[in-house]
Each structure stands twice: as C-alpha cells, then as structure tokens.
Length: 622
Image (cartoon, rainbow, N blue to C red; front, side, top):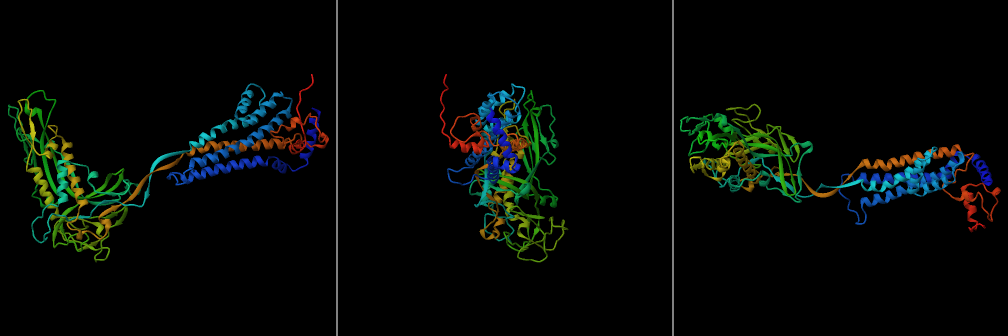
C-alpha cells in the first residue's frame, strides 16, 4: 500500500503546520456540539421534572404529557450521546493500525462497532480473547451498549401517586367558647332550672341507646369531602368548650360483708354502694359536703357491679361472681384539637385540655354570653387563644375596648391569677376568644337528665338454676356496662366516654339559646380550615438521573482522551477520517480523477474527490 504511505506523509505536513486547537475544533466540532446538545437535553429533562416534583399533573393539551416530553428529549439525548462515540470509535480504528501491523479483520470489527450495539458487543467479546486489547475502543463499545438502557431508565423516572392540594371552598367544623342553650325562653332572674335543649337531649339519648364516636356526631361542612384543620409541626389548630371525663378502677376498695357458709355474697364500697344476689348493679351520685370540691366537677358517680368468673368450678356464688367498681367524673373543660376530614369522614385529635370551674362570673358584654346579674358559670380564662391555627396571648386590660370587650370577675374557684376560694378579683377585660363559660342554668338540666338515666333504674337478675344462670334485666345503657356478666373497667369507661362525647358534640353543634346570642365573630362559631381535592401528583426518582448523567460524563471523558491521542499523533496520521470508508478505497483505485500527488488525503479532500468520480464494481477476470 505505497500510495497509502504517501498519503500519510502529506496529511502529516498539512496538520503539522496548523494550530493544534484550531485543527481539532475544525475536525471534531460536530461531535463537540452533539455532546453539548446531549447536555442541554439532560438539563431540560431535569428542569421539567424539578418543576413538577410533588405537584399535580399539569393541565396540558391531551396529547402532551410529562412522560411524552421526557421521551422526546430522551431520544435526542441518546442520539446526541451515541453519535460522537460512533465517530470516535471509527477514528480509533485508524489509530489501531498505526501502531503496528494488525489483522485486516479488525477493520471489520471496528466498523461493526460504529454501527450499533451488536457490533459493539462483538468487539468487546473478541477483545477478551486476545492478548493485546484496544481499551479505548472497548470503552466506546461499552458506552454504545449502555445507551440501550437510557429509554427504560427515563421512563421509570417518574412515579404517579395520589395526593391532595388546597382549593377555595367551604371547610368548617363547629366550636364554641360558651354554652347557653336551654329548652325555654325564661328570665334568668328567676331561680328555677329550664328544660334541656332539644339538640342536647337527642345527643344524650344517642349516647345511651345507640352510641357513636364524636367523629360521627360533629356536624361539619367540607365541600370536597377532604379538608384539613392542622397547624404546622403538629400543633393544635382550634379550641372549644367540651365535656371531659375520667374513670378510676376502684375494685380494690370493694369488701364482701357476707362471709356466711352458704357462699352468698354482698359486696360493698366505702360510699355505701352494695350489690348482692338480686341487686347486681348499683350507681350512686356523689354529692360531697365539701362545697368547693363539689363545684369543681359537673358530675361525680360510682358504679358497682359483678362479673362471672368462668374459671370457678363450683356453685359457691361468691367464688363464681367477682365485684367490679369504678369512680367516674364528668367535667366541663376546654380542649384544643387538630382535625381532618378524609373521604367524608371526620377525625380529630385532642392535643390538650383544661377544666372549667364553677364560680360567680360577671360578663359585661354579649358576644355569645347572655348577660345575667350575678349568676354562676362554669368558666375558664385561657392563657392563649387558638383560632384557626393562630395563637394569641390572652392579656387582660383594666378598661373595656373594642377588642377586649368581655369583662370577667370571679369570686370563687376561678383560675384567674391571684384568685382563690372566697376571694374577689376586680373585673378584667379579655378578647371573646379567651373566655370559656357554660351557664349553670343550661348545664343543670343536662346533669339532672344524666342522674335520672343512671339512677332511676338498675340491673337485676332472676335465677335460672342453682348454677347461677341469671338473666339480667335493666335499661340498655346499664346493660352495656354490665356486658352480659362480663363487666369490667373497660365496659364502664366506654359508656362514660360515649356520654362525654355526645355532650361535647351537642354543645359544639348548638351552643346558643337564641340566634341573637351568637357572637358576631364567625371564628367563635366555627373553625375554618383548608379544602382539599384529591389529585394525581408527580414524584421524581432523582437517583435514576445519575444513570444518563454518568453516561454523559464518561462520554465526555472518552471524547477528551480521544482528542488528546489524536493531537499527539497529528504529525503522523490523518486525524479526520473517523468512520469514513473512503480512506480504504483511495489507497488502490482505478478512476478518472485527480492524481494521488494532488490530494492531501484529508477526509474533506477525499469527499470532494469522490463526488467527481463515477465508479463501477466488476468481477476480476480469472
């Protein structure tokens, strides 16, 4: 191949006299631009997914989707990534034959590697079988193979998940700072108790006959069925007047005063509550002589009953039936909450609570309070008002103003600073959101209704046989405590919780006797939250971006190393042949065209010359 050697000499002279950087840019500018295009496509993909991370699907025209855009720019990225690799692998073919004589078949293997993944795989596998390897060309082949995974990687870049976002709409739940509802319109100067409010009466019957959770009792408004009432970092969002409860297991205080040999039982509490064979259930309302203690609680009572001991193997009644006792309290209180409505179901969590106390309270302005003259209220003045997630310090003033318009003075058991039993505190003025109060005249009918329900009837039993097959009889709510001879602290506690929840819901759903008593500030009637709508949101798997970014980085390094190698050999080899087949054809070819001595054998010159030639292949004569 003498003409080939002549061409090498001319090519060396041509590139040896030119600036190296200019020459490289002139030869490889398309490959450099292609790599920059790949970088731009990757940057566009990252920008698109970053703009939609954790956001709902955009409302674009139907034929345009985020995945569609990723596919388009991903295809451009892949083509821009592979094109320089193919050209550089073709150029490395000539460098491979420059070093020393090689098998002519290597030309085919290198050419195949520039045409796609299959040829690249063959080049890699053949390299493993020989001692001398083209490591740089193998890296190009490996890049071509790895490019096959770009499409599936980019398609798995996004995950679509259900999410919700805030939209304008009604989202509110009832809350109240005070309760003044009753069943009749009467003068508060008359010292008689009104009837129970109809809404509260229905709530009490609901708790006794068909108990429901407070989540089912609260009358909320949520336009989409998904609303939230949550402050940041898990803090409470609103507060309201409520009925709190507590129960203690006092079974250990029960004494059996019947130790006769007949085996019968007579269980007694220190308060006097007694159960025996025929009277197996008893409730007493605690009316302490200590007036201060009595006024601190809305209702105190004790429950005493029995449960069957299934492990007893004999018919001795005191061995077969064991006592169960509990002491419970109902207390008016304030509770702070966070809440949400999900798929039309209301859920709330109590964050904190404080008990109201009974004392003489003077209210100097309406704002939801009916202004009586010296009457008793269950009352509490908060340190902080919590309205729709906003917290406001409750700092009193000594004079009335538009904001501090509720004047409060306690003479007994108040929680105001410096007050105590049988003391009087000068009137202080607070914002309406800071004062919680319940009118004693409105609460007493509720108390009496509960006393009647709990004590007017009891649970009794008739003997079925000597083995004690007793059939309990009594009102439904007491039978729920009795739990069909399996009464325990949990069954009693559950009934008391249902009562407290129903009273809380009744106070929050209908807190005022007449509409005129409602406060002007709507935030004292309801807690307002955010309306949410369920949508499909985009979540990005950012770790997947590392794959195409890594391929681009390796391709850039491959380009730099190849250019560096070509720069070193510029005086001995033509650096722009790349994957062109023309150099092979111009080594020995009969044609009508310029002589070899008139060509510099650059790829551009050979391309121009080839355009002026007419060629026909024919079989050699035998």
